[in-house]
Length: 219
Image (cartoon, rainbow, N blue to C red; front, top):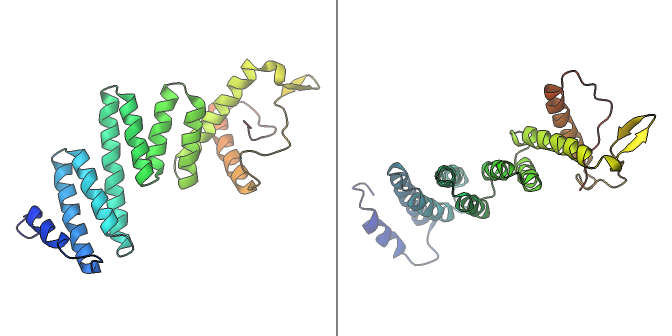
């Protein structure tokens, strides 16, 4: 590897019969990481992805810390490819790239980017699903705020479109009350977190409004 003769180094390392010792697997991973970084610097993102994938697999169960770094490189490369397709207005290819990213490594970044695409296409249910997936993977990230805001907006839109479904109590119309929580699946902490985030988004958007009660929208 010192003289950057990657092809020869790969041939030598792959000639070691299976099961390969961990030091050989680590050397292969280092080779593929270097190749991936080289291709990334040359703006050859797809080639970078191919090499990072090989490195990721070579590190399985032998070096978790380095594997995490490779995972970050992979996600960044996939996102760059998706961004390129978005600039070219090739939404189908961008969506396919992000789905491929999630298939290899389920990650909140790809889910959020997918949600943004679906949101722009006015496919709100699909956007909510993607934000929900991102939130499930990272409850501390921005997905919670985006999800809360979208659910608030959807609730307002549904109220306008389906006014006949609202229940009137003392002259005030409310959303129907559901007896089964389909969102949290009996995990009340999920409800509490979603309500907390939704209240923050709603209060910021409608500062003069008074929040009387919160319910979790159901499908």
